[in-house]
Length: 305
Image (cartoon, rainbow, N blue to C red):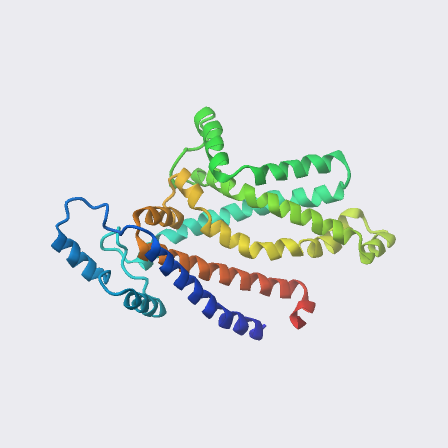
């Protein structure tokens, strides 16, 4: 386990360097500057602003300065949010995105896992087709379609939830469903295929031959192994739930990190964009490592791979 953690940390160094370099180059190639949309700025004032942020330096000096700041853990100041550093914005907004991602993960697991298991147990029956058809609906409906539909039905027509905001507990319901339903569909497909594979194994037939009830066979013997692909999927899924919530945050006006990322991209706030991308990259690497450790705990034989 220690070797796995050490190996992943060593692999993370070049990975993060490549991501940081690619993000820096892409932002430099993007036309326009962060202060181009400002009106009536005299040229001398514009020159002072560029000098303050180091935008007047040659490209290679800006790159070395960028890498040096990131190595020190300094994400730099935001160009558009005056008086705020990028790490301060991340520290303030990320808990909102994390909370939304956790609720969406619960929705995805609570819906996707039982659908996949029940669909496998009713293999080649009409109920399996119905359950997996519902799962496909989650894949086919993107968040920017599902979110407005939920707002129209449950907020505008029924009046059960607020259409926008992040103030009360009920404000978490519609965004969590919008974000989680897409991942629930994939979890259902993985749980179904995993359960179908496990139910054909010899030790399941042996358990049935011993006279165990079908519920005991499923819960005690099959479920843990069947959910192995689901656990493997959770690493990138959790990172996606947290980092990919910018569409949902924009639809429901949630003050999370995703909404800051989108606004920064439109505003050409390069320090905010580069800081957010690197932060999300670290999250993805961390959750993938966490999933590998959980898989090792679930299946000790993988420790020797």
